[in-house]
Length: 293
Image 1 (cartoon, rainbow, N blue to C red):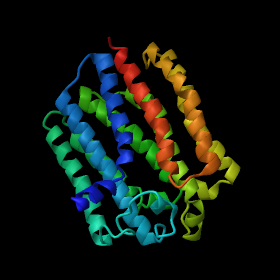
Image 2: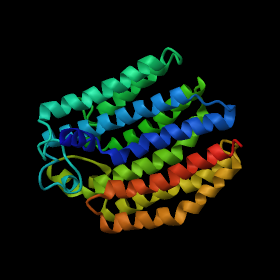
Image 3: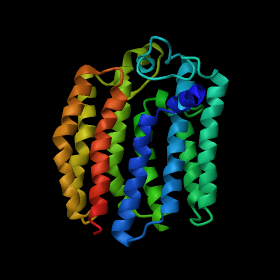
Image 4: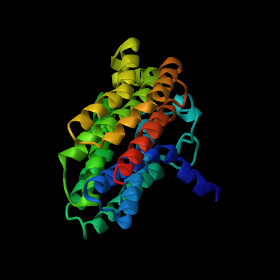
């Protein structure tokens, strides 16, 4: 039983909020626009995207360990269970576990292809994005491209989930995904800011190792603030319901969390920043859905 619990913990369950918000928003937007909702598609899409998210986190631990970034002295192992450093799995089994999680997510996509023809295409692209984050030969994380890749990936999840919900590929779903993708990118930036010194020692480039400290903090803060600037514009151009303007009420709390993270850079910088996504994202989903009634 303890082993099962550990196997769940190493997938970083706190991070499941990322794909859950993306998928839930897509289905809320679909219901707002078309008044359609398929509970089976919703559950399977959430399960599939959560598995992909778990896959990339486990693979990230494997590749970071092999590169020398994750060790007993790393900030990341001080607040969470690491599959290799804490002896839960061997390096080979960690790699295998990450790939299996991704393949189960792929199996769900194959089933959804029976109803949504392009589901498998979206899943294949998604799996490639998962692997390319730090898997060779791409290794985007180590080439200061991880933040850009994450922004694109989570926008893609919203677009793909919207397709599963509606059967349509829409520019509206992409534009409405930008606020969510911005905050998710901020989570990665906070993580990289905490790990900047270790990354430099291991010759790994992220935006946090390239930018001066002051610029990094401004960059993090802008990623948190940007969604609150985008919402009024998306409403103005008719891409969101008017009720979504109330998401601006969460701005003070998001600013408070952002200031705490970039001032203190705690060991759990990424889950701390993820609180912004939980506050903003769940409000965004709820207001969009409420606008349907």
